[in-house]
Length: 499
Image 1 (cartoon, rainbow, N blue to C red):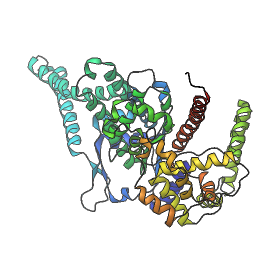
Image 2: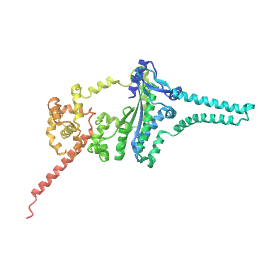
Image 3: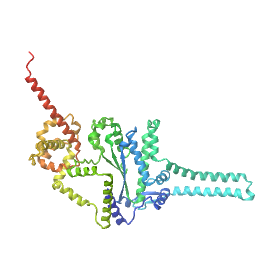
Image 4: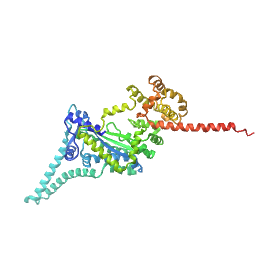
C-alpha cells in the first residue's frame, strides 16, 4: 500500500503539476487560515485525483479486553490517532469554525469559497471593539469629558460585549484543544446514567461524523485522497459479547457510504464464528456466524498453510537475537536507498509479482483459474469437503503421486459421509449455492482432477480454510466412533446368553 501511495503521488504531480500540502511548518498556518475563513468545495478536479494517502492505525483488541465496552476502545483509538496525525490545533479549530465540504454547483473548479458571514461577524466585532475602546479612551483621557460617568459605562459595556465574543471563540478552541474526542467518548461510556439514555449512540456517532467531515476537509487542503486503515487484531482472544460489539461498531458507526475507513480484520474464523453464535446478534441470521462474517467482510482473504520455505524463514527469525534482526532491517534499508539512488527498483514491481504468481501454480489457464475462484466462492462447503477427503487420502497413501480421480468422483464417493455429518455442518452447508449447479459445474463444465486441486490448493485465498479443518476434525471423530461401535457389537455377539 505504501508503494502504491508513492507511485500515485508521483503520477499525480506529473499530471496536475500541483504538489500536495501538509499541516507541518507553514502548512499549519495555511490550514488554520482556510479552516477559519474558507468553505471547502468538492470539485470535478478533486474527484479526478488519483493520489492517495493511507493513515495506518493499529488496534489490538486485547489491550481493551478488560473494559465493559470494547467497541468504544476502537472508536477512541481512531479519534486519538487522527488527532495525533494532523495535530490537535487544526482539529480543535475545525470543531469551532470548520465547515463541512459541499459539492460544486455546475462546472466550477473553485475549491475554496470565502465565508462572508464569518468575515462580517469578525469585522463587526473588531469594529465594535475598536469603537468601544475609542469611546472608553475618550472618556478617560479628554479633560472635559472625564467626569462623564455615562460615557465611561457605555464604552466599557461595548468593549466587554465585543471582546467577550472573541474570548468565547478562543475559549471554545482551547476547550477542544485540552479535551480530546477520546476523552469525550470515555466520559460518555463511563457515565452509567447517560449510557442508559437513547442519545448515547447518537452522541458517539456525532463525534465520528465530525472526524469524517474533518478528513474530507483535509483531503481538499492536502490535494489528495485520504484513507484511514484500521488493522484490528487479537479479537479472537476476547469474550464473545465484546467480539460482537466491535463488529457491530464496524457495521453501524464506521461504515457509512462516505466514510474513508478501510478495516483489515485479522482473525481466526474457527474462533470468531462460535463467539458470534453464542451472542444474541445472530437471531436474524438463523444463528449462523459464517453468514454474519460474509456480510461484514467485503473481501475475505484466507491465508493458506505455510510452505517449507516460509517455515524455515520463521524458524530462522525465531532463533536470531534482537540485534541480528535490527541489523537485517538496517541493511535492508541501506540496500533499498542505494537501489533508489541508482534508479533501480528495490522490490519487484507489480508485473513481475504477477508473473511469479502465475508460475507458482504450474501456469493454469485463465479460464481454469477463474472457474476455481468461482467454485470456491459459490460452494465453499462442498469444495472444502472434497479437498479434505483428498488430503486424507494423500496422507494415508503418500506414495500415490498421481491421482486420476476427478473432484466430482471424489465427491460422489464421500457424499454419504457428508450427509451423515449434515447436522454439525448445517451452518456451513447453508453457505453453498444450488447443489444441481455444483454437479453441472464439476461433472460437465470444469472437470477438475485431484492433480489440479493439489496445484490450486496452495494459492487459494478466497476459501475459508477453517471450514476444511473443522471437517477434518469431525471426520476423524466419526472414524474413532465407528471402530468402538463395531467392537461393542462383536463382543455382544460372542458373549454367551445368560440363560
